[in-house]
Length: 307
Image 1 (cartoon, rainbow, N blue to C red):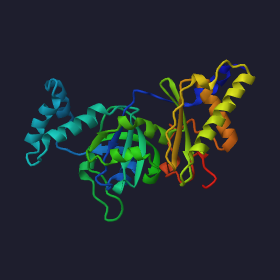
Image 2 (tube, rainbow, N blue to C red):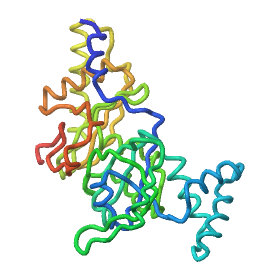
Image 3 (tube, helix red, strand yellow):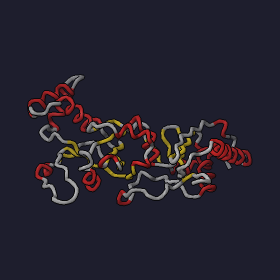
Image 4 (tube, rainbow, N blue to C red):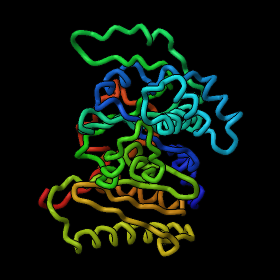
């Protein structure tokens, strides 16, 4: 056996593009949340402003297209008091969001978020949206014409989010860049993945009690000892002293182990599954059937004697 024997396992893991960007798109206080999910889209208003006007602002606006577009908005929407803000949001939605980017949409009160992947870079114009008739009962339907097609991947309850994401949800912009929060978002979508040169293993902590420091450190030490012993017994020529492993822990929450050594990552994954059961989802780029909320514990979990 040699370390290359683990390459198929790493190769089958989802590989996340380190250059992809992440976005939070508002849903009119949650009113459009169900419609966006059901129709697999996101959309932005300002229907009076055409794609041609936005393209013109890029071509003629020099290094400040937002100012050029703001003047167009002032002319076409004289009663709108924030033309520069609208220009910035339109440019972001139309020109910055790209295929394979990740989008989050919040429900009413941000009690849930749905995470999806942008399917194509070009904007879709739905002129029929002008004539939409709002249902008397049921969720509101968007009349916004500028749309993007989305493949929804997962719906997550607020209480299962990394608290780091709460700050993002406080943003009230129509479109907010969420790339600084890429790591906790990636960890919601995947529990075993490769991003750039690093392999990530994400474990779910299910206990609501405090975790004793000794319990945590003993667990980590035991895992590394098992990997080291396996490497030694099989003369793999690697050990955990070569690896930088980072843990980010909240209770309940997640433990993330990150390493640039693919063989170590594979061994850790195999040993963890062998000890606690469950399995890794290595194909979570596929959409969840019905985009239903995940109510069962994730595929791999860690608890304490008190949990």
